[in-house]
Length: 230
Image (cartoon, rainbow, N blue to C red; front, side):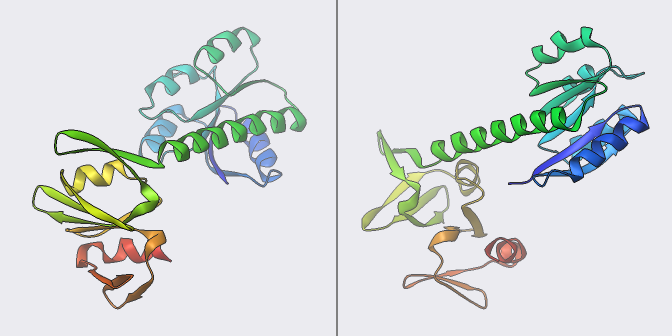
C-alpha cells in the first residue's frame, strides 16, 4: 500500500527536508510540493491525495484554513515552528503534529500513524462492502457480493444473476447500482451489463465469458474495462 502525499510549506528548506525524508520511506510517494497555498489548494481539488504535510503558519492562507477548504479531506500531518498551534491542529483530527525542527525518527513515527489509519479505514470499507441490502418486491433482501455473477440492465429494472441461486429482479438504474458496488471489484462493461472482475473466465475480442454466459463489451466502456482487467 503506497500513500500518495503532498507537502505544503511557504519555506523551501522545509519542503526539501520533507522530500528527503519521504524518499527514505518506501510506502510514501510524494506527488508534489507547494510553497504557495493557493496553488496547492487548486491542485488538490483536481488531484486528491491520501496525506498532506501541511504547515499551519503560512502568509495569505493558514494551513488550517486550507485544510477546511478541501471538499474531500485527506489525512493531514501539520508542521509548524509554533507549538501554540498544536491544539487547533488536533481539533481538525490531524494524524499528528510535527514541531519544527523535527528529526527523521519523529517524521517516521508520524507517517507510520498515517499508514495505520489508512489500513484501518480500508479494512472498514472492505468489511462494509461484503454485502448489499436491496429492496425486492415489498421487502429487503441481503445478498453477498461474492455470489454475483453479473448484473443485467432492463430499462428501469436490473436482473442480478447469482451463483447457484435464482436471479433477483429489482427496480433500480445501472447508474445507482454502479455507485453502490465497490469500484475495485466491479466494472461496467456495457450500458446493460456490470460484471465482477473476479468472475471473468475469459475475454475474446469484445466478449466476456463468465461460465457459459457471453457478455458484450460496449465501445465506450472498452478502454476502461481493459485497463481494469489487466
